[in-house]
Length: 159
Ligand SMILES: Cc1cc2nc3c(=O)[nH]c(=O)nc-3n(C[C@H](O)[C@H](O)[C@H](O)COP(=O)(O)O)c2cc1C
Image (tube, rainbow, N blue to C red; front, top):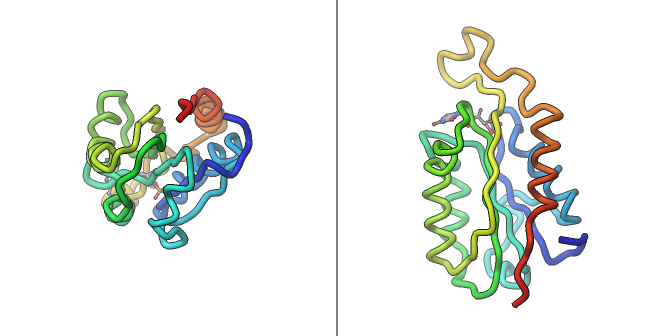
């Protein structure tokens, strides 16, 4: 998709700002803005053609405030969406399970999900802080390159 203002990326990231890094690379590639859910009025979403939503994963789902934001969105038509995350443990099937709650909400609202992206993020949650955490340095340059490639390959259908 070429650089324009018809795409918006919304991210909730707080643990080590790993998902924020991914969001910024994706948004830069799309020429889109990156916003926190509190900066976006749900009723403005129908003006976009492409919406990306992402967060860290907590207990097998996107962070609760991002899910609550998705729940607050109006029903839409002809808006494409993509889902992204960073997580403590990565696998393709696990990503699909971790994304299911958000995917279900967006599909019920009428969004067409184009694609999904996830990669590892630094994790010092709970007892992991006592061993210095896991996934130090993640997301790394290769992860961010994959995020850029993911964004470049998104193809928004014509309305
Ligand atoms: C409270 C909490 C719960 C987490 N639960 C999971 C989980 O269920 N599965 C997983 O893969 N990672 C889990 N993680 C790891 C985070 O998803 C990972 O560190 C992510 O990169 C954090 O994103 P952020 O820095 O953008 O907030 C958890 C982290 C925290 C802080």
